[in-house]
Image (tube, rainbow, N blue to C red; front, side):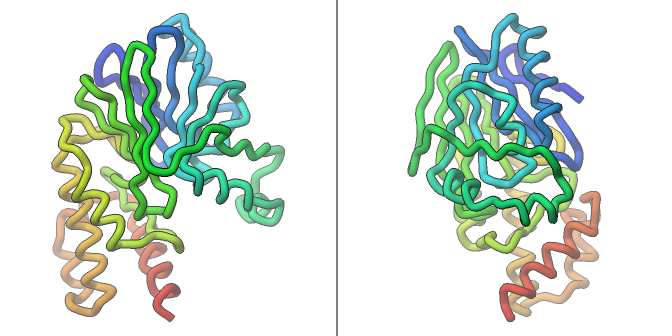
Amino acid sequence: MIKNINNKVYIIENELASNSTLIIGKKGNILVDTSLFPKKAEKIKEFSKDISGKEITLVINTHYHPDHTFGNSAFDCPIIGHSLTRNLMEQIDEKYLMQLELEDIKIVPPNIIFDNFFEYEDGVKLTVYHGPGHTPDSSYIVIENEDVLIAGDTVITDIHPEIVSDSNLDIWINTLENLPQVSNIVPGHGKIGNFTDVRLMKEYLQKIKNLKNGTISSTSLENDPNFTNRKYPELLKWSLENLLKNTL
């Protein structure tokens, strides 16, 4: 499903799969996150041309996870990412791909890297900031003058977030506390939200942290709409298993 925030920002929205965001520039367009499949990325290229008459001339990866980066191979343009994003993607091997049951995937890491932030302007001005927590390399994008923040997996709406082996709850919460306040939040997964979703995400992670520390019981989650209203409870179970492994 494709939705637009305004005539410059379009979201290729997926409930469980990752969202991709197309930003209409002056000379060319910018794509944030390229999805898991190169064929889907090719479709996004077609949409870019159809909606604006312009090619995608810049790609941004919010972090290294396959569902945000494996479509990179469809693009012959600069790809922006944190230095850790490139390093982590360079470690992906055939064994990893076999575990995902994916074939004919060409890993294309970012070719322009940053450490703290990266600025870009072409009709729209945006800044990519390092915002770790979900993963060490996680980043988010602020589109100036458009009241839009593209959060990557730092913010998830509608479904349970994935807490992975290299997630750090304390750092993640700190990143959320320092996000600039805007009206439109594009999550890594789920529907377009607003700044209330940042608060809900922070409360969600804090409760997970409290559960991990033993200061609350699982009943507290079962009675909390911030948990019960999210889809795919198996993701919560998987995340809690990851946290348990990291404490052993």
